[in-house]
Every structure is written in C-alpha cells, then in structure tokens.
Length: 99
Length: 99
Length: 143
Length: 143
Image 1: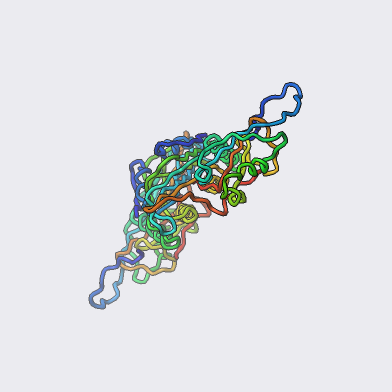
Image 2: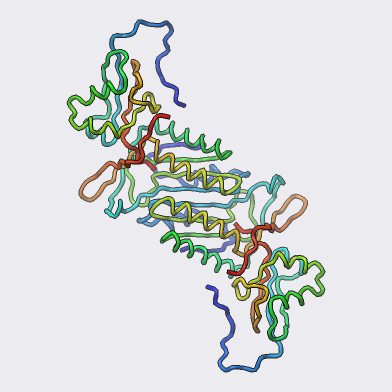
C-alpha cells in the first residue's frame, strides 16, 4: 500500500545536480498559497524540510502553519527529514477533518 | 409503563373466596402445555408460586422448567412470591431470545 | 420515537430518516440479520414469537432509558415477528446523536438490553427439526 | 469490500446489502451527517475536499486493518466530496460480522481512525463566511 513510486534505476546514475518535485496544497494551505500545486526545483539530497524552507519564501504566513502540517511523499506519510527524489509528489496535509 | 391493570375498587369489598387469573404460555412453554393460555381459579391470596403449583398438576415436565422461567403480572416482571388478584394476567416467560 | 413489532420486512431507511434530525451529526444503526447457521449447524429459517403488548412496552422503556441516559432526541427500534429467511433483519435500531460516541453507546445498550428482557423468542428451523432458543444467561428478573 | 469517495449522495442500502452475507448475524452502520450547527453556530452547508488517491488508499488500509483484526469478511466505507446540505451523509460505514460485538467495535474503529489520518478536509459555511475545520488533535504522522 505504501510503496513509493520512484522511477526504477536500472543502472546507478550519477547523482543529478537538481531534482524536481511536485508539491500539493489542500484546504487552508491551498487558500494560503493561492494554488493547489507547484513544481519545485531542489538540489539533490534535499529533504522535505528543505522544500518547506523554499516554499516559505514569498509566503509570510506559511512558516507558522508548518508545525501543524503533516507530509506525504507519493501518498505515504513521512517525517520532515525524509530525503526527496526527482519526480516525487510531496503533499502538505493540514489537520484532517473528514468523517 | 408498569402500572397494573387491576379493576378499580369503588368500595372495599369482602375478600372473594376465589380469584380467577389468565395464564399465558409462550414459545417452548406453549408447546409443553399444548396451549397458549389458560384460565386458572385460585384461592384468594394465592401467589405466582401457588399458580405454578396448580399448573404443574397434569404436566409432568412443567416443574423442571420453572427455575428457568420468569413471571410477569399485567406486563410487569414480578417475583414468584407476588400475590395475584382477580383478573390478573400472569405470563410465564421462558428465557428470551429476541434480537 | 419509533418502537414497533412488525410482521413485514423492516424498512431500515425509514428508521434512519426518523433519527436524522438537523441537530444530529452521527447515526449508529444495528441490524440483527438471520444467519445461515447456529454454531455451525445449517439454519433453514427462523421464527420469532412475542408477548406483543409487553414486548412493545419493554422496548419503549429501554429506548426511553437510552434517550434519557445519553440525552438523545431520536431513536427508532423495530423488531420482526413471524417467519424470517436468511439475510432478513430480525431487529433494527437507529440512534441519532449530536456526536458519534453517544450514538454508538446508546445503540449498543439498546440491543444488549433488548436481548435480556424483552419477551420475544426465536425458533431455529433446521433441516431435521426446530428448537426454541433459550439462552441460559438471559433470564429476565423483576426490576 | 467497498471503499470509495463519491460526489453523489451515499447509497446506504447498497452498503448494507454488500455486508449482508449469509454467515453474518449483525450489521453495524455509522453515518456522519451534516449538522445544522458547529458548536452552536448555525451552519448553512459543508464542503469536503480530499487528496483523493491517498484518501482512498488510507481508507482501504483502515478497512483492511479492521477486517484482519476482527476477522470480518465484509466492510463498506463511502465518503462524500463536494458540497453537502444539512442532513446529508458525509460518511457511511457498514460492517457485517457473525456476532454484534465485532460489528460495533470494527465500525467504531473505522470512523475513529478515519478521522485521524485520511486526508479529507471539511469546510463549514456560515451565513457570514466559511472556515476550514482543522482539529488540533488530528494531525497524522508517519507510521
């Protein structure tokens, strides 16, 4: 159920200088960011936290929300220090209120 | 909900020499007794236990069932030593299995 | 409040609609349905017999107790009588409450209590006979 | 197993029918319905947004966990998305089990767990504005 959807690496490639991840915003975070998704270019080895730091630039209220946000990479919840890979889908998940 | 349906006594009558109660049988007890109800004449002051003793006559398997039976007089559960009144409805209630 | 015995199939959506009040946020429903076996022995059908007037009075008392205890404004309870086929509902309970904890607890209380003191009896029909079910643990007593 | 997000009204009888297997004797159902108020403040309508693919995957994982834990063969879980009016069901769960204890416990587990880690968000519309509901206690974490 929680397998990550990273592309298969047939041969060990040289670490790319940059990776691109797709960030998803929902509910109050979509309102705050003014959009539902954004493509983010990061340096190789960047973590979820690094992505958050990038996102906070130009969005003054974003940083204060981060302590209340959970993170999912490719639909599995992850911790903030999780490294990202090229092509990952990073979802920022405000406190859920389904049901 | 549990009021008894005894007829109103306008003036204090002399205690009747005999009372009549209607006994109801259900489920396995109806099978055992071969009927669903019976009118029983008892002496004044008779209790549920007295009625049971009368019913056991001519029904050999009845007495062994009594320990597993509950009693209701006029639709309210009562103990075996409860006195009966003329016109009462006495229900013999085998272990219930609704639901 | 709906409290009823019925010889017709139970209309579950009607019970749910009855407890779906604007102030309620959760509805818990329980259905007892006819199983195809009794402790492994194949069951053909069931029959339910009730001491009808007292059964309805007891059902009403149980529902009123639940409504008072959990502060509910809407409960529906329906029990079948007569012959039932596999898969048919013998009993249906619907409880609406502002929050889900009360709905679950009251619904569970109603079915548990019904099984101990409502004068209804179940007959299990097997291919080679039938028996009245008489649980040793469920003997009502004066209250 | 039925696990679904839907923008159409939830068909509760269909969910109940799905879990009404011949071996099951009890069916517990829970419906979350739109209340007319949020802690006393009048609510006009609700909106539900989901991270759809992940929400369905999480719902399926919760249902599978419940089926394994309580040994169930039939569970149905449906959650609405989009705009809902007062009285409409936002979520419906149906759990069938041989006996009622398992049906109640699994149903309660599913709704409680859904509320903590399925990425769905509720927006409450009042007469003078709208807010996303963000319970402080329900922050999912890596598992």
